[in-house]
Image (cartoon, rainbow, N blue to C red; front, top):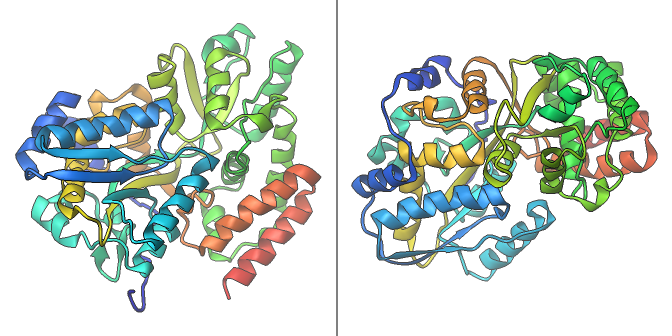
Length: 438
């Protein structure tokens, strides 16, 4: 247990100079070079090591495998066990992990997110302090301080980031939309989106792909509509309590979310997020609001081409970047701590970062990687991460608020979908934020 823990989350305000300097790097970025680089920096661990996550979709599995390959090449006598647990939007994996930790069956490494989730593990004393590893490997020199701060508590760093995802991206099937005579601008207002939706419906096209079998996807749709309409500053004020959820601007944005639900596919409650992305790829619907893990799914699983088969736009300010970061930790009390360290070192090499993020769709966290090896979308996202305004996602537990606030959003979105009462939703959220603030 760690007394007086203070969460040092600062919204991932990444220095533009740091990430943009990466564009001039000469690093190469294939899976084989990732393995080679890992060989030079990772000691030869042996035995078996569990890597635990909820990553089971096509792009997620491929990206994770790239890290396994790099680790294995550097540590040929180490067996990495993919202990991923599918289903429940990550809820199933969290339950299994909690059971394992309670029983003392500690995985060598597992995936988590900066914010309240990582903070809970730190409070429990089940994750190792990686501050010394950051210093010995030079990560503290190439990972922007703001990102390190997002994983630090009382001056100690507890996780290694694989990448940073952008949550507020509106993807669209380019041939389908253009075939309907619709032009999609680089950034749109909700009113623009409503006009486009009406045009598509008039031609018998379902405007919006949604897969909310798991409620978080609907909650993310709502979050990004709210962020897009009220702006980053007002969203941050919602999070710190200086703006009420019952503010008329927020109520209007929630009302617009209700409108957006009328544009969705009829089978949305039977699909998860990957099903919605598949619908977009197949052309059964036109748009999908999803984080850029959808980019990895479109390019890796569906073999779609950026700019030819699909496009993307942003609701509201295109310089707003809603952050969702993935990280891995070293478990305290595992059977093979050296195996965990070997895995973390491999994922943090420049080549490992490129190989992973190229498949996953996120932006690398190191400032010394060659971004030209990434797709056009990812290069633009990395630039926005560097230069734009960062907003922490409440849906994904990244916002600097109690975990109960994220849970309240999920519960209240489910009620909102059933009732359509925007005012009641906003009143419930205002009450939850006030209650959870103590």
